[in-house]
Image (cartoon, rainbow, N blue to C red):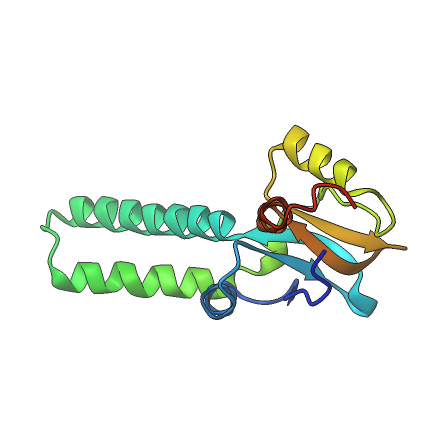
Length: 154
């Protein structure tokens, strides 16, 4: 278990969330409230899906608008799409895209149980929660390190 967990607040906007992913180099971030209470988890894939959706919606709106006016797309149109995507993304918060039905484990549960839950749910990380508070996280990478160290059971 890693006990130093990089987290985000639910009100963090998408641009700041993306910057946090880039600087932390992790695949998912637990979303916590007061007293480190786990509220959800947001992955890079959640961010990419939402970004792709917002870009598609902006492109569709721009395309429909241009067709209505009978004009062809030009560079100004692409700039407008980019500006609209940026505006929309800045309004989206971590709590808007996070998964709230988070599979967790307690700090005293055996490593085999953590592995079982991760395999059954096909997830790459498992927040460790004690009395609704995030106290750590177990990742697939942790299991690879455990395997390579030869310590298969603890």
